[in-house]
Length: 207
Image (cartoon, rainbow, N blue to C red; front, top):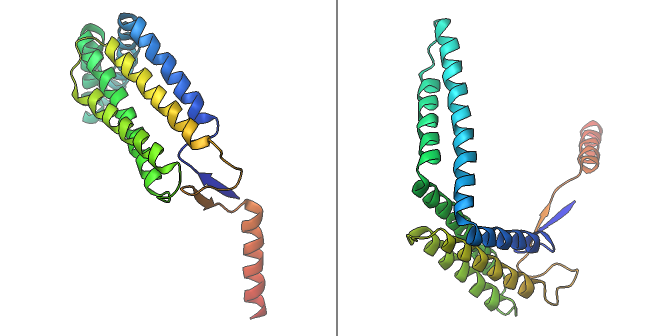
């Protein structure tokens, strides 16, 4: 079985970019609601994890089994949960960092793939520019301290737009054959593995 690893999938990259654009629009228009939603959801999840860890520690301690890591983990989880629920500024920084890290990671992966392409490939320069723009946008999102979380929504939409442009350049005039810059991985099927094992056993018997 042969798998092709390319910089842009035929449908998945476009779909994820569109979804990211929609999320960016939501953050832009409903910034406070998004912050409140993330605060409550993450805070509640961390609080539940903390309570479970502390309960587990309490049960084990009655059996004379002291697991300090569960005690520490439980306390830290509850402290972070309180921070998420009651301190919205921290949540805004958290969202900004996560979004920026995702954009930066995407840009680096695009750049790695582009550099594996042949320099004479007509798609090389446009995709190189796209990857550099993504890296720059990711760094800006992480480093720049924005006063309004809505600006992160604009950056998310910008990221999605750049990705869509990259998708268009990559898929333009793409044929079914493997393109330069693609990497092929040969993954043996179960049937192929069994046939190989049988052939090896037969060779050993004949010897």
